[in-house]
Length: 294
Image 1: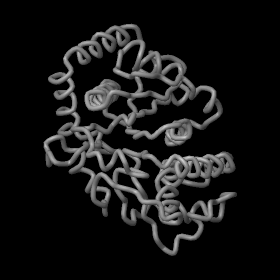
Image 2: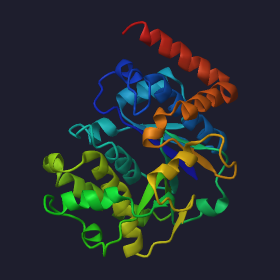
Image 3: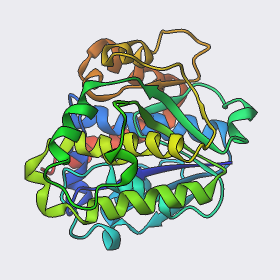
C-alpha cells in the first residue's frame, strides 16, 4: 500500500518564505525537521511515498530538501487558489479525493515507528484513533447549526454523540466510501466559505474532516480499524507525542500544542540526526543558506 502526505503553502508565494514558516512548531527549523523525519521514516518502511503539494511546497520539500518522495503531485495551486489559509484540513481532503488506489495518508507530524500490521493494510478504512466526546465538536456544531447552509445530515442529527475519528493516519481500501466522504466534505465547505467568521475556524477543520468522517462511518456501517485506543481527553495525546513512550505503539504524533514542548521536539531532532544523517546535513545546509539571505 502506498503512503501519501500533503503539504500546502497556505498561499506563501516562495519556498524561501516557507522555510521561515513555523507550521505550529516553536521554530521554522523544527517544522522542516518534522517533515524530514516523518517522510524518511515512512520511506524506510514503504516503497511508495507520494506527496500532494503546490509549487512552493515542491520546491521546498523536493527540490531543496530532497526528501524521499517517489512521486509528487503538484496540484494544490489549481485546487486551492481561493482557499482561505485557515482551512488547513482542506488540502488533505483534496489529497484523499485524488487517490485511485488503496492508500494511507499520514500527517507531517506523524512518525511511523515500524511498518503497520498487515491487518491495517487490508482494512476498508483506517484511522488513528477515536476522539471520544471532545467538547470542541459539540461547541462548534452549536455555532454551525444556526449559521451554515447545506449541513450534512450525518452531523445535523447526532443524537448527542460527538465522537470523531482522528486523521493523523487515514486511508484504506474502500475507495467508494472515501470518495463519498470527501464529496460531502468539499460541498459542505464550499457552501460556507462566506460564513467562516461565525465559527471557530480551527475547530471547523476538525468538524468537516474528523467529526463528519466518524458520523459517516457509523451511519453507513463501514468497518474502520483504529491504530490506537480511544482518547477521552486531549491531554492524553501527550503520551502519544513522547518519543520514549511504549515501543509497541506504532506511531508518534506531535499534535497541536505538543509541538511546543522542548522535551518532545529535541528527541525528534536527535532521531533525524542519528538515523538519517545525510538528510539532517542537507537540512542544515539549506536552512543556513536561506536564513542568511532573509
